[in-house]
Amino acid sequence: MLNQAIYLAKKKTTELKKAILVFSGGLDSVCTAAYLQPKYELYGITFSYGQRANQEIRMAKHFAKILNLKEHKIVNIQFMKKLYAKTNALTYSKIDIPKKFDYSIVVPIRNAVFLSIASAWAFAKGATLVIYGAHSGDKQYPDCRPEFSRKIEKAFNSGEIDGIRLGLRKKITIWSPYRGGFSKSDLLKIGYKRLGAKIFDTWSCYSNTKIHCGKCESCNNRKIAFSKARITDKTVYKFC
Image (tube, rainbow, N blue to C red; front, side):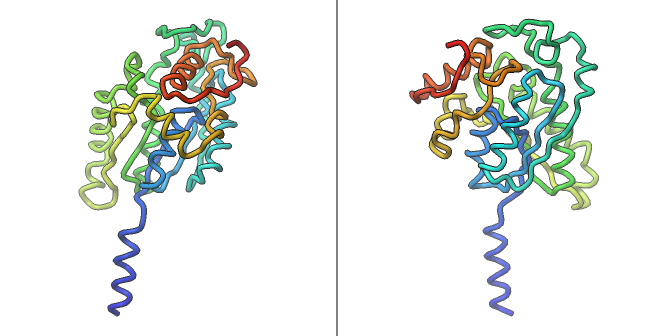
């Protein structure tokens, strides 16, 4: 009986807590996964929401295997494209994608939609952490800011408060690298240390192309991150 008790105690201390990660296959989410994997059992969730950058889905599947995520779900919410209509350049192909930040690339409360579904899975899965890859360089996106994630975390826990009090649900924390004070280049250094040259296969481009366009806002941010991290960028770009 004593040996069994010792075994159970050791097992309890070595078991990793479950975490749900919004996983796009992009630089930020892949590097975030690399940072958290030693501490958590990661479950990835990728959204097909009608985005022009459909390479995201393929790369998310690719990196889910490389990172050995415990489980990876692709969730089809392409109906959102019709709801978004002409509001943004990431789902409406007739709007030109800008080279630098412009509000046309802000998809209305996209992270709120993603985090709602990811949090529902977390409550069902018994996970205590929900993660998305917003970093400190995402200041211009309202639903990336820590203020937003703290408020939506409070709202979601309030929505399951009875289950939490009954012990049927676990309280969740919604975390992002932004909340942890990480920049894009900080994340890149972590991801590169863990994944090496594989990091160049992550997908950042907003365009519907086979290789990175090299001129959209996201491609330009990717280039800047590599430069700041002092890592030679071996990403293939159509336009350098």
